[in-house]
Amino acid sequence: MAEQPAVTALVVDTSPLVVLSKVDRLDLLREFAKALLVPSAVADEIRAGPVQDPARVALESGRFGEPIHVDVLPMVMEWGLGAGETAVLSLAVTSGAVAVIDDREARRAAHALGVPVVGTLGLVLQATRDGRVESPAMLVQALRDVGLRLDERAVAHAFHAILGEP
Image 1 (spheres, rainbow, N blue to C red):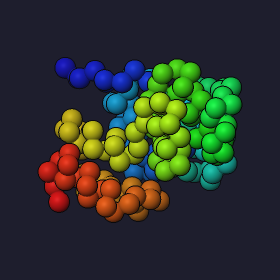
Image 2 (cartoon, rainbow, N blue to C red; image 1 turned 180 degrees about the vertical axis):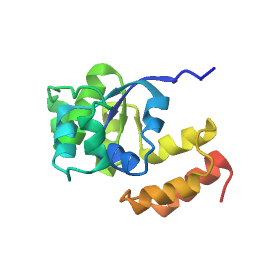
Image 3 (cartoon, one colour; image 1 turned 90 degrees about the vertical axis):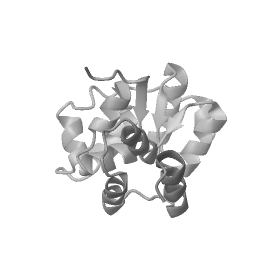
Image 4 (cartoon, one colour; image 1 turned 30 degrees about the vertical axis):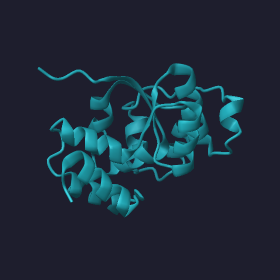
């Protein structure tokens, strides 16, 4: 029997959707939460990409569900983030969902706003703990190869602390 996701909903920013789509691991999002919420601003950013981009194909096929219109909160707007990050954090604040964001400044804003946040690396590590990723190092390298920027020290620390790997 499949284990139920521990998180009710994820509000996902553009970067995690794009890089996970490119390595064909959108399943990591679906396995982490019962619901996947994609703000319209994020959908717009994805639609601005190449027609054959895997994230755009997934979006247009309905794989992320219907994009959600978000009323931006002034307290989030004050951070001066991009449209996608601002919408993600506004929706996370109002819905109580976990924000999936890789951008460092947006993650700082999430912490300051009391929004639970996880990044693509965190999803990979959780999936590894749950037995859904056999080689996290290979997956992290694949994510880097498609454009995910990760601090080497953060990756090493995460692998060591959570997985016992150097």
